[in-house]
Image (cartoon, rainbow, N blue to C red; front, side, top):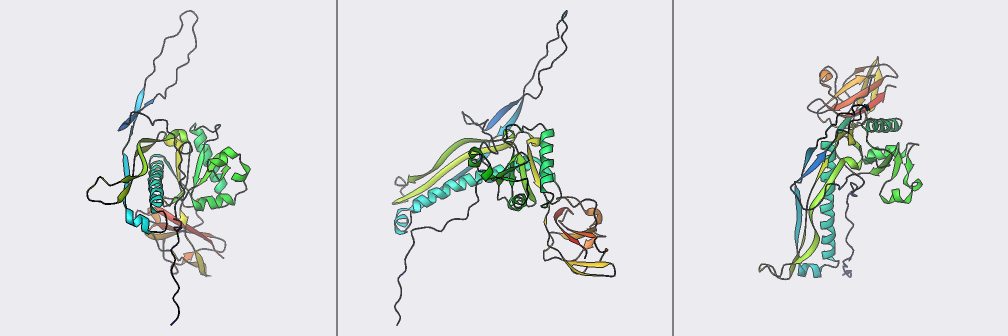
Length: 360
């Protein structure tokens, strides 16, 4: 009988797959309205009207004006906590430091939830920009348009704090653009903030968000705020005082917080259609057949040589019936060199994904 080799337990735990937390204070959010005492709602004063300047009359002077103050409510509604029991025997019987691992996990989970809720606020309360899918050739022009929108809305630029949160697919396009300045060519202070580069006046941050259709978010930290009104950092608490537990402890932590976009024009959430894979199957007698390996979200429609490419969430109800497309079956009237656009639409007939083929 062969000898049986012994088993050995590693004291190193397999690295967790975690999103990098990008929505940092001072980079994406300000903390201007965080304070003491803790409150259920923060009242933010607003004075948008500037002092009026008038032509001066030396003989009679000028009539005095008055100012006014309005208030915007910032309710603090998020209250999250962790509470995980660690048995003393379990902690000693595993080869690694179980307590340290669970404390680390608790800190990450609280911070990750803060990040996720912050992202949801930016998307829900900012300005939505729906547009056609970017390509390597068009991505820079698209960013310049976003810069123009922010400048016209009087969002500051001279302080170099405008940011662009790039989802992985969008960031891949930026890396191929000659206008992109990588972090290695930026100053140490900029690199320490986590930026991966700059383009058109925006600090770029790679951001692994999977919101459907979201390409990027651009903004300025002056116009989105985060307030942490109460926080108990994750710590180990002995359960000796609880008669139900013997030799056990618990990892506890809690955070009360919220986010708010203060000016919609200061945060732009940019949505673009996802990419639909297409292959030309045949072309004969002025008819082309295309195939896709993707399943439709709702259904497919087609256009030939569209004046403008389909934008995310664009309504295609008008052609949903007459221009319906079935992969490998629909014969589309076209000639060599025509651009055929296949659009994946949802149940509301809104564009979700899009693909293109030039007839050959």
